[in-house]
Amino acid sequence: MRKYVIMGVQGSGKGTQSEMLAAGLDIVHISVGDIFRWNVQNHTKMGALVRRVMAAGELVGDDLVESVVRDRLTQHDWNFGFIVDGFPRNRRQAEFFLESYDIDGVIDLDLPDSEVRRRVLSRRLCASCGINYNLLGSSPTVPGRCDACGGELVTREDDTEEALAVRLKDFHEKTNPVLDLFRRKEYVISVDARPPAEAVQAEIRQRLGLPPRSQPEPAPEPQTQADRSA
Ligand code: AMP
Image (cartoon, rainbow, N blue to C red; front, side, top):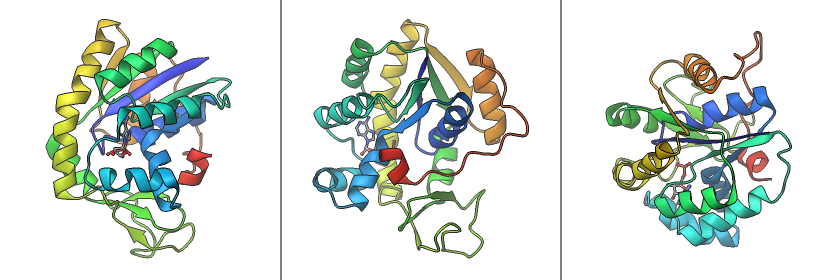
């Protein structure tokens, strides 16, 4: 059983690295942001509660976030473990998590703010099936259209200059202290997130004492938000 947390600023590749690790180790990838986005896109009651907060780049209230994480983890579909992405984001969430679960490691993806801006502003999301694209590296075959379903590619509501500034400030003020808390327990490995995804993944595995990605192992299929939230 392996239980990991992955942390890093927006655009640092948390989703990509989590998928690569989850696919190779047969563990479940749990992205809190994806669960919220799925709810917004599917017009659920929770979606209505979080939509405006997310669009402004602000953090959703701790009570709601903690209940989402608790509910997701009580599904117990993670026989071999999990990797949680986007949580905890502040001290209270970290304390809640540490009270409930033993963690084997915290992966801290390190990316300078200038690179964050470049990456985040080129992200696109399929409005129909929820697959994520980044125009810097994985442009769709037909510009503006999803390769998988032909749906329209849109910018995430929170990927604007204004919302990004709020999120970066929040990250430095609230999320960095969480890393310090985990560091005291010697859980944290900090990895430079600037190299290509495969190199970052190799570094993560080496630092966690895990076997390298077997070759040739197909890159994980991009998951839809519905898969992630099911
Ligand atoms: P992400 O995809 O991780 O960037 O999350 C997108 C948005 O979901 C964030 O900007 C927050 O509004 C919300 N969110 C995700 N995870 C959390 C969390 N742990 N605490 C509070 N809000 C969160």
